[in-house]
Image (tube, rainbow, N blue to C red):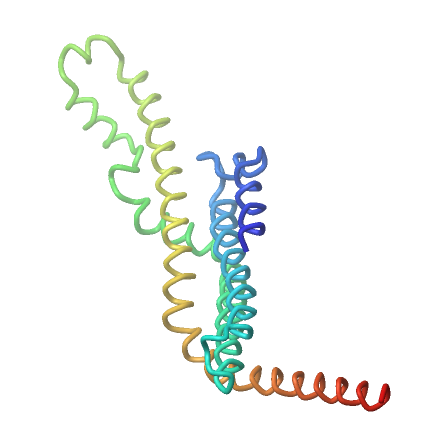
Amino acid sequence: MSKVTKVIDSFYNSNIGKKLANPKATVATAAMIATVSNVSKDAVNCAYYTIQSLNNDRIPEDQRKFVAALDLSNGIMNVGVQLLMSFGIAELITSIFDNKIGKHKDFSDKAEIIEEKFKSLPEELKKKTTKEEFAKGYKKLVKKNRDLARLGFTVLTVNIAMQVLTKRIITPLVATPMASFFKEKFEKAEENSKAKENHKLKTNA
């Protein structure tokens, strides 16, 4: 598990990873980074905990396969649902932000807002700049703040949707019935393995 985690960390610390994490990145890129981070972590955890449960001597043998099956089911659901949710999520987040949060006056560069902000400046600052220069600088600042806020909102929304909605609501509803299916598969695989071993012993006898 630690080796896989190191590989993932290396990617995020690479030049490509740093470029993707740049504040100038798009909403789609931010959503992708959050999705890849969550899904890769859950995929690694799924494999690790499933294998660990199958070989954990502290779990009674008659319960071991079901516990492993439940770990596998949780992992599959967490990864699968998050990947499905990632399709179109960037467009949805952009729409929600622009129609709700983005309309707040702090993110507005309308003429009346700029006029109001300019009038609120101390007199000594008004003497050092014109309305046109102030308006130009204010528009740049508003755009930068809006872009950063949109990215922050994206990461927060993706994590809430994927981590809370997936792991606390959707996965628990499906994971247990799915675990029964995988438990049967584990048992059949064990039976087949024992049958092959017995056949081998009889052949060599």
